[in-house]
Image (tube, rainbow, N blue to C red; front, side, top):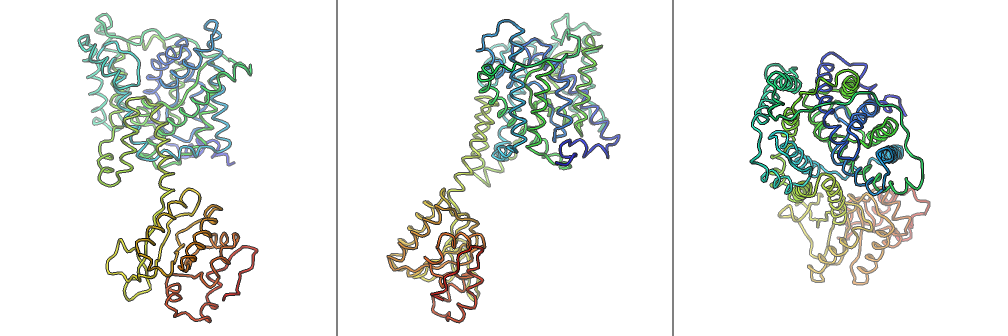
Length: 585
């Protein structure tokens, strides 16, 4: 493996410039400031001491920066993984905080091991089942959920932690009377600064400016004494070395939840990275490299008192909007957290939660796509259905359920489309030797006793039944007038054993009903299969032609034996060791 592929940062480092540094520094500081309260809150959600959420965004963040292929993805603790961590460890019966932490470290180790192994064995292809409509639906719904989760900080009210739309909306309505207007004013001020600050200058760090103004207002006006909630005390100290448990019985208990976090975390992380990457075409996003990077980052969390991490939706959105150009932004975020832990814990004491909510709200508002659903509604109803279903499932059942459902929908759509290949009856364009689909073109020359069919796709176990039923229907529609069937296989890329067996049966059955069969336009690999399964002998080597025109000439009895012998090698040539049966040539 090339060094710059194993360490993607080597691809951008040689040409790194001042413009990139400005964006990375602004984004790194902004996300770093977000990481402090988020890390603490998510650690508590996972059942851990708040400090471990900050530990999870120091060494792990730097490790991802070294190995990650996404230049904007911001990794760290997220609500989904935090909830899954708590759910997985709660049943372990931990005897005190120390043992609970040991289980969390072990879980991070297992997640890292699974993801790293998947990357080594190049299993990143699983994300190919995340189609664009699925990603669009997931992204829009997740943006709404994350936006609603920040309403409690924007309005200064107490709301339960949830990823379900109905619970969140109901809780907001029940607590709407408790709005804290000073908090609302700070939040709106933050939104205005962030949304319109870029108009001052493209390089203006609007989110960072909003954070600074928020801190100064709370400190200068004493707003915290009036009920404005702030970040408060941040514990100090860098993470020391730790070790997970290597007890195999504990591994067996934690493995199911570790596998769930590995798959769901990677699917969500890659979906986020893919969404952001659509706006940055100057680098290549590699699913397998992302698995390696996330795996190494989680291993780092296990050995430095963290817990499982993955790509964060809101932080990535903020990171991208704040101008991140490379993974150096993540390094700046980690350094800021480390410096904060060492020297500046008191600096963020007066940082209002409403400002952080404003940063998140502005960032995710741009991720809600209104145009694509309308576009798909008019152009592709199937893809629109996938988008809408993923959107609704994510919105009502949660982000992790939504992304898994989206993958399942994409896979089902692949299977459905593969099982129903396009098939067309062909007719001759008048005055030419060109044949076209009779459903698409008018005035084609069609013979009642000749059925010409083109199959567009492989012939294999998943679609042979559909092909057979389609052929039988077309034969029935001709009321017994069909004397010959010409199968155009120019668009058939492969035939498996099931397809070969079925094709042999079709030929035998059609000939029993006095319908001859010819094949035209086969590709080399398909001819190899036909030879391997003795289908050339079954059809007859004098019934296999280069193109439709030659096959039709044979049907019209306008093709003499000399012409058949002349062009037979071009229609029959195969890499198979079997000899071509020329007995009928």
